[in-house]
Length: 561
Figure 1 (tube, rainbow, N blue to C red):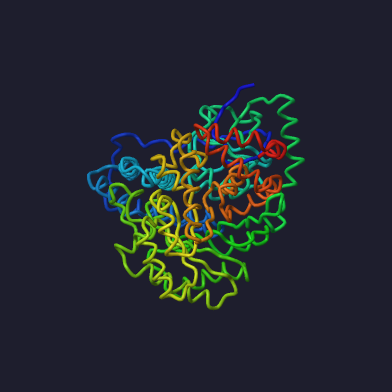
Figure 2: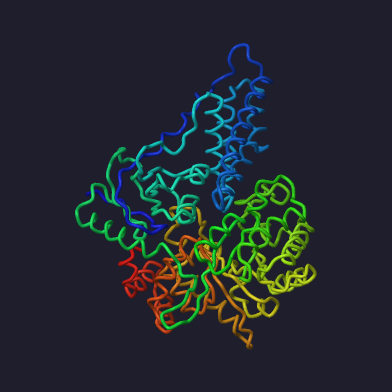
């Protein structure tokens, strides 16, 4: 047996044969010139037509997708007609370079620029190269690389998956996802979790296995084994037998002794909300409102926004729905808000901070939320992302009051917000921990990079201490303000127990994770969860924190989580 260790990002134990993603579009020859007799104007027109065709094809696929997949496709579609990309190619064509070579070189330049900027912009570099390949394929009149076709279900293996591919994966055909590259918060990881597919990333060398190789994938342990033996087959069979226990959520999250831990869903729009409600979600802990904007080149009107928000509210009458105001930034660019020239976008003007540079957009969004809430039975809460100070929290609360919003809150994803939670929570009614960004900022580790996966995990004791400090701030001076978690950490059943032990009041996650988290929470008392939280905090490393806690939760092994 040949083993390929990686990073587990979505649980499950599966055995199946692999299909490798097709090889990428070949690079046009260096120095390739325009065909004899072809004018630069004609070549530029052909390029723009090809780019528009790629844009339209991705937009058409976005219409059929939902949630994270829809947002990824819409953002990638915008990149296909990016001004910088097309203008750069046009300049090369004007000097006699062929259209294929021009877009190839322009894509390389834009991608390198984004990589050098680091942070969120670096993550967009892969998107540019994907779009570049699709445009070249369109110019050549050949199919772009994509998910291989097969009559039988298979395990998909690739060096990495482009956003446009991950967004349209068919869970009826794909048994599991495995990539040689990527990180725990890459597109592949996020989409796999939302689809409930077992997945492992950063498994170096797995993309060299030939098609048809039978492999065992353990999405919790982050292990891939070629030509599995009988013990691994038994493990996969056992998981298949117990997986049915994770298919349904009763609708009430609690510990074994009855301590309630409401389990909420992360959604991107009305379709997600309806699906989450059907899976038993007790409400919405994170409504990513920017997903309603991503397909727009201009700001939607107040009325358009209100209609989009009400669609989510209507799925949860009488239940809590927490909206996050626009979290636009380099990873989710909006033409009317995002400055692509920022030297360090991860630390730049994003989230709440966009009101500094583009005042009025946030006011109008709050007006739309207030308007939608008036015509709804949902209990509407609103929080601002990227809040760093109590002063910012107070200003946001005032803006909410002006819009008729009763329950303002903040995202805690900047370490300063966790450290000053007591002061911040004097100004607002609740906080929600965004563990993805909180980990990134606390550990100074780009959350998209595979080599930093060991640093970029919410199991880091430093990150858990920031969670604990936020909870402590919420109860200081008799506040008793609720603190939830809406980052990916909430979807990890073992970490959900630790977060409960730290005093977190609600957990919000992709709806497919609700049943697994509920099943594990039901096996511990609150006191036991608190002991496990202390154990994790005492660990010298993230790996040991995770291992120590998991060793105390045998149900994880039984359920293959």
